[in-house]
Image (cartoon, rainbow, N blue to C red; front, side, top):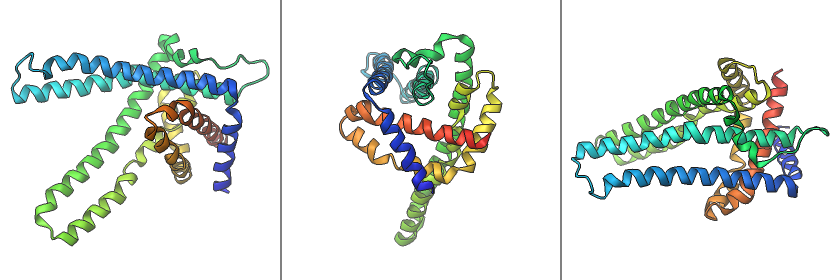
Length: 260
């Protein structure tokens, strides 16, 4: 049944990708990618001032500059890219749940989070929660592999190989805390008056109830994303992102409806 449900939502997503919807989603995905690249270029250009020996730095100061560059990039994801992803989800939800008298989706909806300070603040607060969950998972994974590296000189070859194998198996399991963030943006889009903590709690509850099915659903798109990156991002913009966001929106709608 779960496999048939995944196939159904993916088939529905392909059906919704008519010429008009595909055009809107491609334009939105292109804007999203261009904004991401632009931010990266601006930050790298600014910090290159310190890397080309224009300013002489001690090794300690170089580490500080690298940490500052990483921090600025993360702030860019939080302040700019997460609101844009919120708008990308809004476009997909307009297409999936369109009514006969509702206005069609437009690429400009990508910037809907910036239309109101209240909406933008809600998106930033939700994004901070998502960041915390990501940092928690990333910290666990880094700590595990750092510990594996420390044990290398003290273990025989076979035992160290078994330890690395166990770490490889545990790495995806440590990403499980991220599953609780899956439905936060759909909940905020469906309920403009819903509080952030209520959205976070409901997202965690509904996501964990269907954790295995959600992971299998996402993993089914790995070959598509591999194709997108193998083509230098061309297929990622032209098909993979539009296809994935529509299928994921349909699946999120099913989880929300089941949780009511």
